[in-house]
Amino acid sequence: MPKTEKRKKSQEKIEQAFLQLVQSKEVNRISVTEICKLAGLNRSSFYANYLDVYDLVDKIREWMVKDYASIFHEKRGNSRENYLKLFTDVKKRPDFYRTYFKLGFDQDYKIVYYDKKLANQFFDDKYIDYHTEFFKAGITAILKKWLAGGCQESAEEMMSVIESEYQHRVSGKETYGNQKISFTD
Image 1 (cartoon, helix red, strand yellow):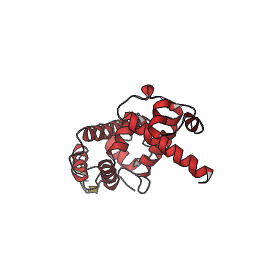
Image 2: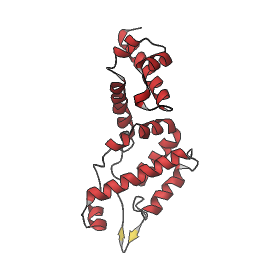
Image 3: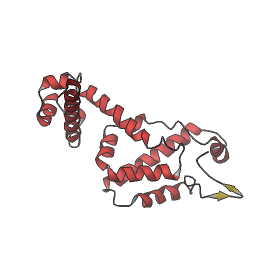
Image 4: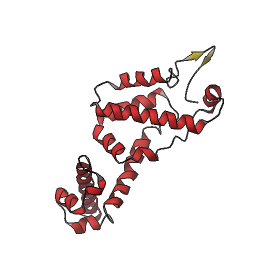
């Protein structure tokens, strides 16, 4: 087996062992020895890839945040399709999201795109940072509660919760006067 392939396999084993351990323990209680024992590797394999457990967490953060953000790359904005895609992904990979939230990776996520026309219409283009933080916190809280309950509701049912909370503003279905509301360009 080529050296790069062997290294990749070791990294995968280490990451999987860590992700398994973090389900029942806090990061500061997980040792390199425990990770290596569960991964079936020696400590030198761990240290050939990571400085310490926190370096491992940083590497995991990189791919988890990138993976999470990829959901929103196809279509910008707060579209119904994006959130339905998110709920579908959470239901399909609950362990990924439990870990994502447990490790606090959601704190790093920033809403960098929003519809300026809607911001002006609904909020007079004021306090947008506060509105986006409120929205982000609401979505995060709903996802965490849904995960804690075992994702019993369908992705469509969860989307209806969001739509009812935001008066269909994320769906593009709501009409105010003669104007159709949409969160995409």
